[in-house]
Length: 178
View 1 (tube, helix red, strand yellow):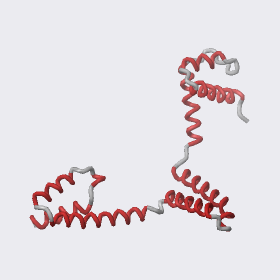
View 2 (tube, rainbow, N blue to C red; view 1 turned 90 degrees about the vertical axis):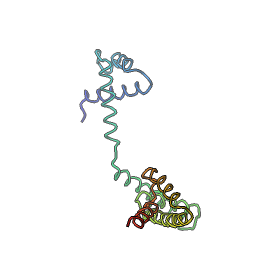
View 3 (cartoon, one colour; view 1 turned 135 degrees about the vertical axis):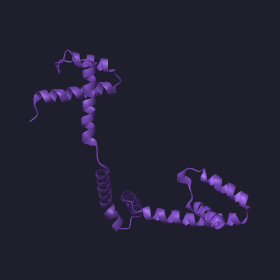
């Protein structure tokens, strides 16, 4: 059983948070708490109000914080629950329920990272198309124009670098300086 004094501290901290949330300064919170006979703290100042608010919020944060894995598991359980609730309508062919289930499955796939291989495949296909484009452009440019294009591409941030262009430049340098 919780000690009455501890209950009083918990209640005081909750009240301090409520007052602070309402827009009061720490000094105003301290004045309100000091004047409240429920708490019996006549010498309660702004630093005490700050400590109470901080400790109450820290406690709340520790109770509410979930790891990524815990959050993912919670979301998966919610999705399972939603799909379970839809199942009777799915079984009789209700198209809206089926569409909702498809959305649930899409969300589940994203949570589990099942779409990552698809993104990699798309990136590989894009790089192949870009490589073809680079080869095509190379055939229609002078060496000086192509060098200038590669210089511009090299100035791009790393996350914009296109592997096909970098490989093409390496091949050109090997050919020229072999």
